[in-house]
Amino acid sequence: METIDRKGGSALWHQIGEILAADIAAGTFVPGEKLPTEPELMRRFGVSRFTVRQALGRLEQRGLVRAEQGRGTFVHKGVLDYTLSKRTRFSKNLIEQGFEPGGELLVHEIVAATERVAAYLKLVAGAPVIHRRGVMTADGVPIELGDSYYPAVRFPDFDKARLQHPTISAALASYGVTDYERLSTEIEARMPTAEEARLLRQPKSTPLLITRKLDADADGVPITYSESMWSAERITFNVDLR
Image (cartoon, rainbow, N blue to C red; front, side, top):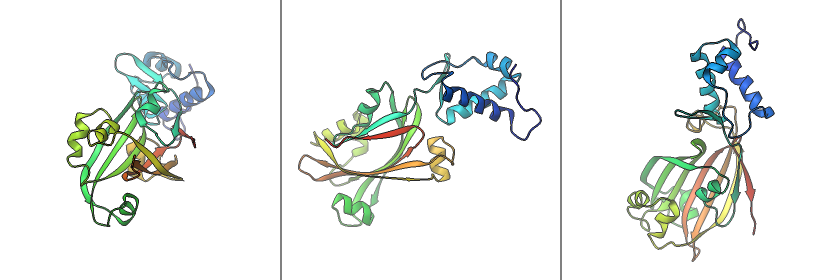
């Protein structure tokens, strides 16, 4: 049985989580590998099933592992190498590296464009724009919290079009936008707000990488402005200038 501090100020589940996280970092458990079962961890640390589940739950919140119903808990596949290029596509980026893309839409609304959004989309301030906020995932682990803006006049009923098509690219194609390119990308780093950390299921002490991007159609007309918050411990950016 592994020794843990049962009289100190740190909770047992927290200590176990840190030990398992260190095992993962050291390569004891490699990406894709199944962790020991709950009974095995109970015997290793001499704790209850509830304590083990707390520790595993914390590791999942940090994006280090993923739990699969009926199969067990597996080490996450690791840091995503995300390519930023003229034709960056979220799903394609993930699938090519063996990750399953996913996401959850949190907000879809029509709002008045702020001066910043209007300037990027070449609209007048106050013009109606579609605002969509969502969390994007890789193998079920949140990696991006994004806010995207589209000209509402050009893309009426975009919420319905998005439901009818599997990807943003396919939805845009239904409006005649068969191809589009990224015109610009800005990147900066900052610490998350409490809400951002909660939605990304990461500690508030973990920094974010912020991207601001502008996409345009084949004629160079802006179609989307996006601001995204990425969990810095789960992603690296590879900028393709070709």
